[in-house]
Image (cartoon, rainbow, N blue to C red):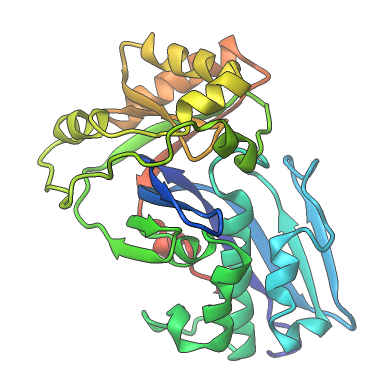
Length: 308
């Protein structure tokens, strides 16, 4: 990397539109079937040359984000020998422990940025479409050991995620989706939610995800699917039900569900204007909640590192 080149990498939030828990392996890992999309709400990682290694966390959501060995960004950085002379600054905009993959998305961003650094990507230089194929490098193949959600976050594309996160299949042609994301400012532990789940062997999604002509058709199909962690999470954090009820009370919101293990929930809207109108109402009614509007789908271009 040239002495003056920096890399700026965005880490889009991961949204589980569905999350079916279909089993549990002998080693304790849960088997999932999930339709995953990405938001245009992001954390941001900046990588710069330095005399020695440093890692800093800042931003509106920095509180509660570890800047030590617990952080997945540091674990990814240690896979790259070149990282020892770099400064990494993570700007947190996504709440922690919130069911939208913030830690995994940050780790995936670190992988993308550090891979570009190790190859000496220059400003204006294009990135090959298969550059971040995890099977291409030993480091890529080790990401799954750090976190089961990291691989799906690497490309930030709409995916069907099965197994414990290793079985990924691209999903094309979902209708345009506008959404509001709401977190009631309550962090929730994923293992604790899974412990509350009494039935671990639930039906998967249909074998084939159909083509949808309209957002209305998609919402109808989505309503027939599930997030099996929603009820267990609600029993731990009653505010989740309050968020869902608020979405359902809106005539503009077409559908609402919790993402991941919570506590963030999403509401889907027919268009951006309706989402924006409801956004302002929710922000006025619940000023202490984390509330954002977003486009949902593939955020691959947004996630591409930018060299300056």
